[in-house]
Length: 109
Image 1 (cartoon, rainbow, N blue to C red):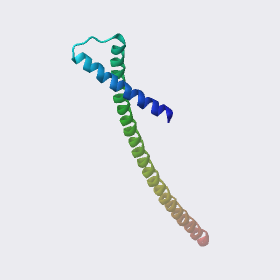
Image 2 (cartoon, rainbow, N blue to C red; image 1 turned 30 degrees about the horizontal axis):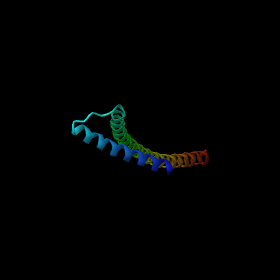
Image 3 (cartoon, helix red, strand yellow; image 1 turned 45 degrees about the vertical axis):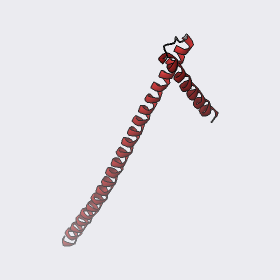
Image 4 (spheres, rainbow, N blue to C red; image 1 turned 180 degrees about the vertical axis):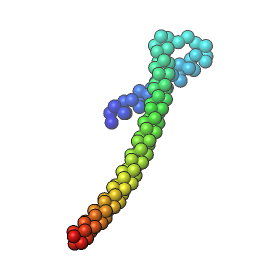
């Protein structure tokens, strides 16, 4: 909480100072080394914000893709479970048929 507030205050201060420096430049006045550094920090901050937004978008897209893949895998697993269940029924049926055939052969002998 305190860190977020501090960052917000610093960002706002940087923005205000950058605007003042830009106005000074527009008037044709010279700026100090410190003012140049403030302008550079402001540009770095803007670039970091853009990178942060880009990374967040990529993370969101990746999470969405992971969710889609998980859903697809769950669907495939459910289909395979059904296939195994059907195969089990078929094997049981064949087993019963074989047992019946063997019983008939034993009774005939």
